[in-house]
Length: 140
Image 1: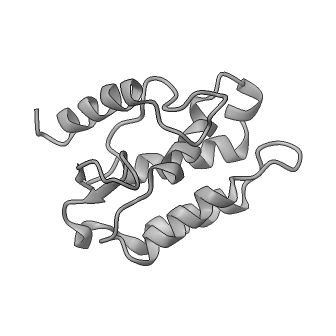
Image 2: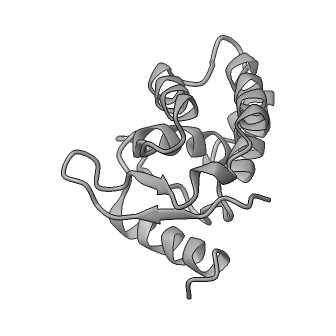
């Protein structure tokens, strides 16, 4: 569970980028430690978290006042929301879920992306998840 409160206002370059309402509330040391676990974890065989997800989260962890790119959290969530139990039930799938829970108040009920475009968030799925985030953050 997290105490982080997120804001969303669509940006021209990234329609689903999110920003912390109070960046000072982030426990950067804990978040970095959890993300290091994600980076070291294996998703089975040679599978690891994608370079784009790593870059997006490392950029954000360097300065949590900047927006978190949607591509980063979409790629992270795919590991624990995939229909492939062989990927979901790996050390990487579990590490991604744990990191997500430290960053966001609610997990999406469905995958945020389509399997064909695994980095591109679908508006309808984002809307459902964001509404649940708003409720969990006490805004609805």
